[in-house]
Every structure is written in structure tokens, then in C-alpha cells.
Image 1 (tube, one colour):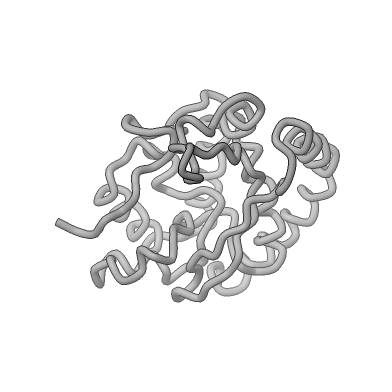
Image 2 (tube, rainbow, N blue to C red; image 1 turned 60 degrees about the vertical axis):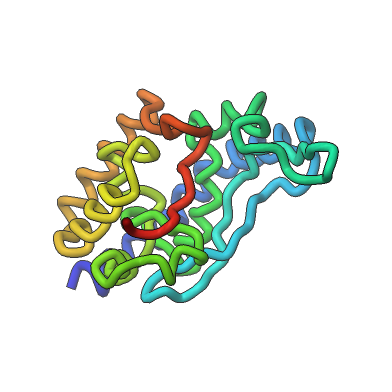
Length: 201
């Protein structure tokens, strides 16, 4: 009952309230990105959601568009700097996902939506992470975030699918708040973001 009815209802109500409360912050962040690096202000990318259905995720763009002599984008760690790095550190880049929650593509809590190119790389157990809506935060995020290796991350994702409840969601939201304040797990140990998943051993 909670997963099918109350969770989606609470998601939309809370997303509506937060969109109103954070509207001034989102406007300021958008202006900072525009004057720091121009357009586009939003980073929009297709991601697989519930049962693998593809949707467009919205985030504030935190990386510059800098390219090398051959016209290729520079590595993430070289493009994540200045205002963008501050926005990422404070997790303000996630605010536009409130629109995804309002649309019903996402929930506040659930496995993070990953790249659609990963879909054919999952084994049967890992694919179960798509049995719930993806979330802005999740059990893996409060247990290491980008510091986790992929196998551990998927174990946490599937564990959440099997134990989803109102109390667990409240716990994850509270732990997320603490993690954001402490700025933990934002980058992996090898790069500015999470390394790509290349399949199971």
C-alpha cells in the first residue's frame, strides 16, 4: 500500500512544496551558471526509470563545455570547477529533479537512475533495481555514494527494493541531509564523478 499509493502521493505533495520554497535558490543557481559558463543551464539526459522505462532527468549543469584541440570535451575533473564545483558540493545541482518527481518519473528515495547504456550490462539480480522508481537519494547514497564500487552499490539498491518502507525512507532522507552537510562521498577516489560501469566480472 505504501509503495503503490502513499509514497507517490507524498512525493508529489512534498515536491510541490519544495519547488515553491526553493524557487529563489533555483533562480540564483541558474543565474550563476549562466554568467559563469553560459547556456545550457540545465543538464538533460535520458535515464532508465521504473521497469526500465526511459525518461529525461533534469539537473543543473555543473561542468564547463571546455574542449581539447581536437574538439573533444575535457575529462570531468578538469571541467568541474568554480561555481559548478560549489553547486555540486552543496548538491544544489539535484534541485531540478523536483520536476521529475512531480511528473512521476522519480521518487525522493530509490536507486539512483543510471545511464541507459548500462541496461544490457546488468545481471538478473541487478536489474531488480528497476522494480521501484529511481530516487534523488537512496540507500547506496547514504552508505558511501560515489565512494562505493559498482557491485556494492547494486547490492544496496536491490536491498532497498526488498525493504522499502515509510520508516526506511525517513531514515534515508535524514541521513542524506547529514551527508550533504558533511559533503561526503561526492567524488570517487579515482575521478570527479563515478567511474563508468563496464559490466560484471
